[in-house]
Length: 190
Image (cartoon, rainbow, N blue to C red; front, side, top):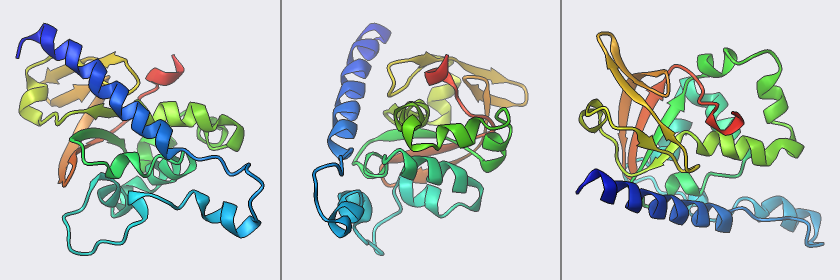
């Protein structure tokens, strides 16, 4: 597939991913009882208990003690169902230390309910439709994110960097790949 064809197909994949995301976000302002509105966000594939299948991207993140902040951000932005979709999807998963390196108060501000859409943009800026293996990343092509942005890939002597963040490790998931990274992408805030 040529680079031009890839660039045309990737926006369509991102549009599909964002349409899925929009379908997953639900409002609880419908006047339902408190119990019904409390459970409204706990719907969809992310809440199906499956102890026999290989872990999906959300399962990988939840199972990692180094990604509790990312999981909290995904939950606050109500993006759980996106991370269990069939994919393939590549997620660049910042560690807890990466979130701690943000300017003081930035994470607390993002986690406020009134900043839910900004938080969703930040989380989504770490996802890419497709399966970007280390070999594919090593080709040096830019990576298309679910936000519609492209970020650069750089292979250095000490490792591979995406959007300036070093890939520390990679975990295969049933619906794609999780690349553990050492910093938070702030593409959505720029």
